[in-house]
Image 1 (cartoon, one colour):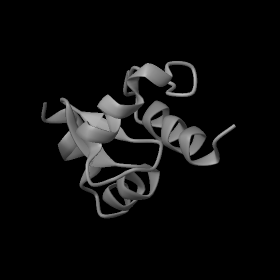
Image 2 (tube, helix red, strand yellow):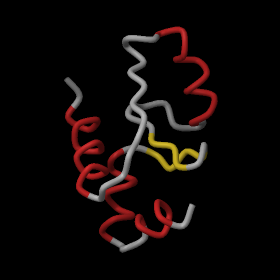
Image 3 (cartoon, one colour):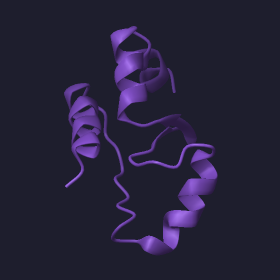
Image 4 (cartoon, helix red, strand yellow):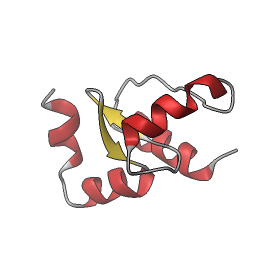
Length: 76
């Protein structure tokens, strides 16, 4: 029920990227861990590439518009 989560998943699917979705509302015990990993960001979704936080949908969409997302995704 999160439009930003859906948009992020759709963008990654369009690029053919396999990803693991972790829904914090279904696993609240992981919330603190994710907030710590994503600091200083505190909103969801949070996208990680190779265990590095790259932000949320707006962030990956901006990278896509600049032509930089593929470099992050496919250089790993």
